Amino acid sequence: MPTAPRPTAAPTPARPSLTERRKAETQLEIARTAAALFADRGPGVTADEIARASGVALRTFYRYFRTKEDAVAPLLAVGVRQWIGDLAATTAGPGAPSPRVALERAARRALTPADEPAKEALRWTRGLLRAMPGEPALRAVWHRVHHDSEEELRPVLARLTGADPLVVRLAAAAANTALRVAVEEWAAGDEPADGPHGPAELVVRGMRALTAGLPELDGRPGGRGEGGAGAPEGPAHP
Image 1 (cartoon, rainbow, N blue to C red):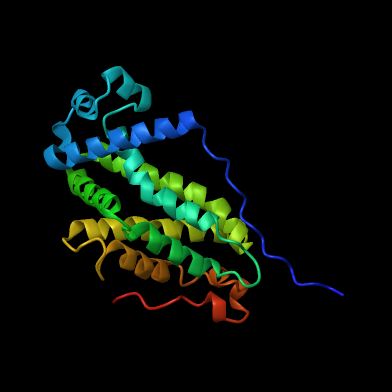
Image 2 (cartoon, rainbow, N blue to C red; image 1 turned 90 degrees about the vertical axis):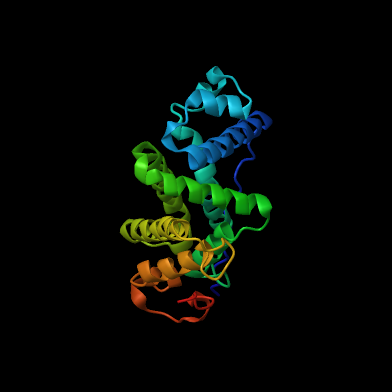
């Protein structure tokens, strides 16, 4: 007698070594300092000033980053890594949330500041995004972070959806674009990060608009099948 397929568990990622964790912490601390300086003073900030304000030698700075603009990448990638890591932990299979619901949940959590450091990181990101029109190299870093995140998102969505490569690529591009545009739109205004018009609400609106033509995200290849668990959890604020 056939049995129902078992849920597919997410692979357990290897824990980074102590050296890797310390390196990542140092890079993030430098990134916070760089972001604060760029947001406050604009593109005139130098690598030497970032290094001194971070408490590291200039040689150490260049061991971690090729340019002064690259120094902000770890900060910009924090929310993206949280989103993809959260999504990657999702179990696929019967009884599990649909990929669409899992995407929305993970995006909401990534862009909903849970504590003061998270709020501060979003404020720094807002300052950086406002500085970017006058600094193409900073914008290039922002787009590179999101390009890399889209690449990392593909295998996660492939496992969760079981869809063909084109659908997986479209879904990754749509979800990643929704995240990027939500943060950019929020950063252009003055709304608080945790309010009804914060980035968490904006990303859900954008994701629903951009993925509306992808029924595979509801667990319904080709648009056939039952709804239920695949339906979005609630309306985003208009």
